[in-house]
Image 1 (cartoon, rainbow, N blue to C red):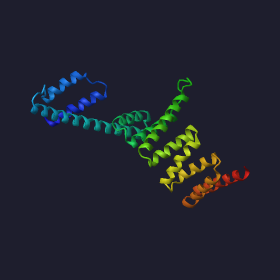
Image 2 (cartoon, rainbow, N blue to C red):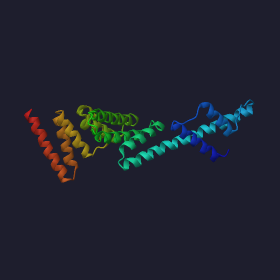
Image 3 (cartoon, rainbow, N blue to C red):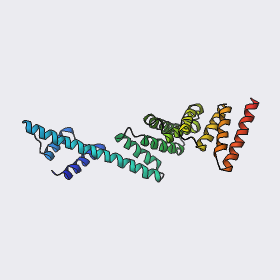
Image 4 (cartoon, rainbow, N blue to C red):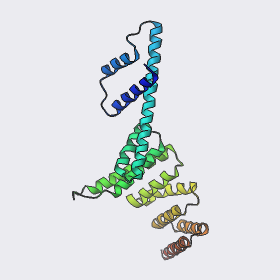
Length: 243
């Protein structure tokens, strides 16, 4: 059998397996014996030949599976571009089956789950929407956290989990450390500074909030943003003095 033919067979075999349509183990073994010309080896030469042929088959299947994982990732990216967040979520989850240590895939699952949480409307008026929204939010949170576990300095995932915790789940204290870590990496990101200053204000960390607003004022060249930081700083100081 030619190398091209073997590759095609391997891809087909992998696809059948992925789709849940794989044949029984005995049938697969019979197909392999036919395709590779390997029956029941007995001599040393026959055994070595059988081992080599099956090693080649394993390599072909691994290559096919790797390619399928890439295709799922590409499909998810296209669907995300088209704002098909539910379908993109499914595609990225499938890609993770092939690449379970890819932090980017977990990040994109988090993004899609976050959008799906916002899209969870109670069309049936059943009252089940709150739980569905919460489930999507927890999926987003856990996906971002997995991305961070793989790559601790993954800035986008740090920012993502902070936003989920602070603004969607409502656990401000839980989200603050992630924004702090994000700003250790993205030291001039004024959007994150605004978010973190607001979070500090919410938990009565007024000094830290004022310091961040001062940083924004010194960094930004945007007069509107500077004015907003100055206004927010005054609000924080007033709250600090009246406590």
